[in-house]
Length: 310
Image 1: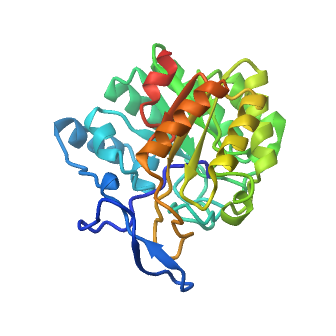
Image 2 (image 1 turned 30 degrees about the vertical axis):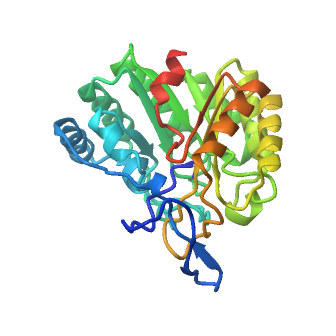
């Protein structure tokens, strides 16, 4: 699944202002303590409650709750949510991801309409949709994707759409089905740098993901990608990834801190400082990205409405 929507983990409230070692991981490796700048307060308001009601009453899945996104309170409090289609069970088992993995259920034929109706009820000017990976399906879920986009546009002709798609195993005819449905932005996450990609991604690979981005960009659609840091990458590796994305035609990049979902997942190697995130943003803009969102709690769809406006 394409996420970079890493969940809230290690929710202790006594974190110091700078990272330090805290116990040992399942493999005996030292774990680092979550720093002060990663503390959040989810909170709730009337808009949050209404968003939650709409999502639940329409039997919808969101990456906000599935991925335990740290920005859920802020986004739902503004009436926005990132819808997750194709069910809530992924056919892949990436080591950074908290989404349930296993044998998915059959696709819900009514899901595209339910998503579109929910967007209509929320009065969204911009909608973001992602999905689990459906490697079990002959078309890997591409037709369901296209139907969802078209149904959103049918019921919400003024709403712009950003989609965060899987790699479709690099099959260009399936990527083209999504492109032909004409969402305003198509995002596909690289997740991490080239060296670490095979360590944490169960099926997707770096080269295929780059080609997905290139296919999107070559179609004239705005191409976007996202990565996590704190997995053990170096700044030079992040810059190399930026160069690869710019060369492929990517125009928007999000960079956020990896947060370990459970102690069974890939461990956090480092909590990257806000100063380093600011440096990544400056470097990315100089390299040619039109927009870069880079901060500890940034996730793929964070402030997505700003991206389409620009």
